[in-house]
Length: 191
Ligand SMILES: CC(C)(COP(=O)(O)OP(=O)(O)OC[C@H]1O[C@@H](n2cnc3c(N)ncnc32)[C@H](O)[C@@H]1O)[C@@H](O)C(=O)NCCC(=O)NCCS
Ligand SMILES: Nc1ncnc2c1ncn2[C@@H]1O[C@H](COP(=O)(O)OP(=O)(O)OP(=O)(O)O)[C@@H](O)[C@H]1O
Image (cartoon, rainbow, N blue to C red; front, side, top):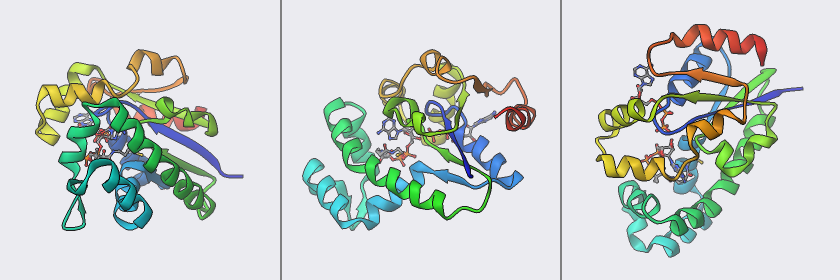
């Protein structure tokens, strides 16, 4: 029976870095962000729904207009909720199909929103990657060249780290002052 573990955490916490380390060790990791984007480019029904939600600016030359959509959903909860209702069920179904095709006894799904959506209940365990808001703010400024206001818009659309810590015993501290690999290897023994 395949064990399915979630990897979650706030924007800039280091989910992708932890996921890459797990992949290097040899475990399959499903990236929700990446697959959500592929689905939003492939699924005609979703393209049509997003276009009616956001207007023709949702796609430019058939490419998802990510900065425009981000400007819409991170400053407007109702638009974000409506977008989530369109995209998340498709990602959930896609992840289920992906899991059925895996041979590993242990697989992972990386997703920023496992606690926010309640999806964490469907997993055998959830790893929370956590870092302070200050550290995450600096990382996202550097990585995505976003303003502090834009980044805080993303913070405000996610659960507080302190709340997430109450929902799982498996936490990786990633402020940069504690090595990641020993924490990951220790978790793999416990999970
Ligand atoms: C708004 C979009 C177009 C911005 O794309 P962009 O390439 O700039 O950012 P990316 O997709 O890498 O997301 C960066 C981070 O933003 C955060 N984030 C993204 N979507 C959401 C959301 N709906 N709610 C809260 N946080 C979110 C996550 O921490 C994510 O890791 C994109 O994030 C998106 O389509 N989001 C809605 C679909 C979704 O919820 N995806 C998350 C995985 S299912
Ligand atoms: N321990 C670390 N030391 C230095 N830089 C780090 C560390 N962890 C993550 N980073 C950097 O911080 C940025 C955010 O990390 P990462 O993309 O893994 O976060 P994430 O949780 O996947 O974010 P998102 O929610 O946007 O997908 C990246 O540029 C990454 O290289």
